[in-house]
Amino acid sequence: MSRTKAAKRSAVTQCGGAFVEPLGHSWYRLHPLFAEILRAHLNTRHPGLERELHGTAARWLNDAGLLAEALPHAADAGDWEFAADQFVDDLAIGRLLTGLDADRLGALFSRMDPDTPGSAAALVRAARELVRYDTDRGLEYLDQAEAHLLAAEARGTSAARLSCALLRVLAGSLLGSAEMAETAAKRAEELGAGDILTERLEAHPEMSALMLAGLGSARLWSGRFDAAGSALSAAAKASDGPSTAVPRQESLGRLALIDFLRGWSGRAEAHAREAIAEAERSGLPPSARTSVGQLVLAAVGIDRDDLTAARTHLHRAAVSAADSRDPIGTSWLTIVRSRLLLAGGEPERALRVLVGMGELPSAVTSSPWVNAQVALARAAAHMAEGRPQAAVQELAEQTDDVPECAIASARARLAAGDEEAARFLHDILPGVNGCGPAITVPALLVRAQAADVLNDDSSAQHLVARALAAARPEHLRRPFLEAGPWLRALLDRRPGQWQAHGWLPTRPPPGMRAVEPGNTASAPVIEPLSEREREVLGRLAQTMSTEEIAADLFLSVNTVKTHLKSIYRKLAVTRRGEAVRRSRELRLL
Image (cartoon, rainbow, N blue to C red; front, side, top):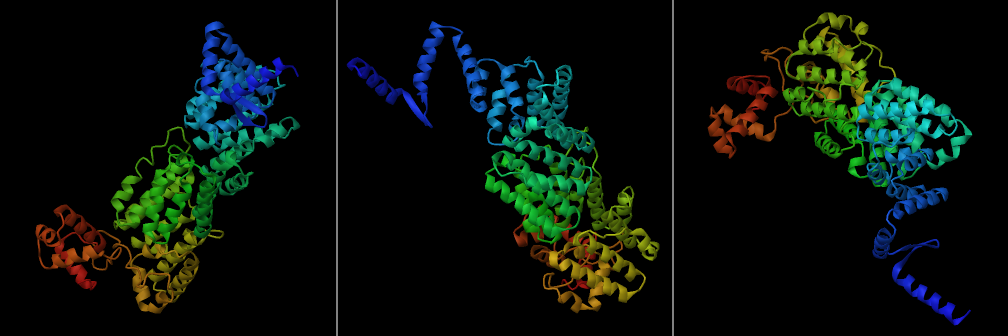
């Protein structure tokens, strides 16, 4: 080697140490500051050449199989048609919806010229709208994409058609349209069966995971639990990785909800905890996490009368932003919030929460199980306020094949003094085969209540014993707390039956309010009085005024009024004298 050539190589090496950064695998890049200087010189000496070079770089990188690196260059070149075409042809449309690159890709394509033609550009716009829950605009762009595809030749459009099917499934899940999702999923299955897309589908596992999760969600919303469980289970088993983390944890949360709605609290809890663990393991940010798993745990806590845990899970669910406009997450959040308020002794607030049901978009299809759960929550609140006839009317519009509604309706009719319901209970109640303890236990208790109305003490005792045995593995306390005054009287006759179950409260449940407003003669307490409420009640018995009680307990007058209101509700009374008299009957004073 000549001295001159050696000197030149040495100079390059020295410059490289200052201006070139190694990226590994024999790849290098210019230092950002040096690159800016060169870019400024380029724009000064050769205006317009930079865009051309970006376009050349985009094509070279894309041909080398480096789509992620090619897209920013295509964007800087202003060649949005090329960027969208390559993005869709690679079957990367799902990366706009989930995965580590979703935010980066969303920001990149937000710069896309609105006049960019072609089906791929329309699909990118559709995906960006759907990920923001704007189904109207998303479907508008999907229609545009399909119009382009119909006009195009069949060759070379398979990836675009499959991407279109995926986005249709997603739109169907957001609108609660199982029909839309099913049709699109069937089309996707036909397109994915060919060899032409197999390799690309293997490189993008999020496509099938998103498809199955969306299909399962649409089926769940429509009440087709078996079909929903099949799709969601398949999505939950998708290959591990950042690109499938969101649909996997979402599917596990929805499987937990299906278990809960079928009465299997233990299974629901397991699936919910698995969903939460998946989100933690994958490092998903709160904005990407579904709240359904936390909401299911809150609902399980309510059924077990662990209201502290239920409030904790409800708070964690409310923090998540992923479900802000998802019909399943939004509806279930409202229902669980209402149930928790009722369990805490606030039936009026529980009813108010259900008004509007989270203000779902008008385009969202009605869900049968959501309607049933709302009716059940409203009926339970009416029962807590001593209005069983209102509860019966609330449940009248529900179909007879929903066991929980039929059970609640029968219980309300019995509480209203309808002996006809007791005599023909077997004709009223549907079968509960295949349902979990959270449904079978209330069914057993309402049958026991009917037997008690008919003075069949032996059958009533036997049915209560069965209910206790069925509730024990799941620690279901709520059905007994809400059963009614008849249960307290029955258990008083056989106290050992209650004491044999250590997972229950130490004393039998005091029951619910009297069956009719104003009938306080036999109305037991809805729930035990708190320590502070007992202190207020004791001073009430001393004929102290509200202001005197407040001063004596160092409380505000409004706080004392709140305690008095709670005491009146729990004792099923409306006046001070009635409260004192009733508390003495119950030996609370």
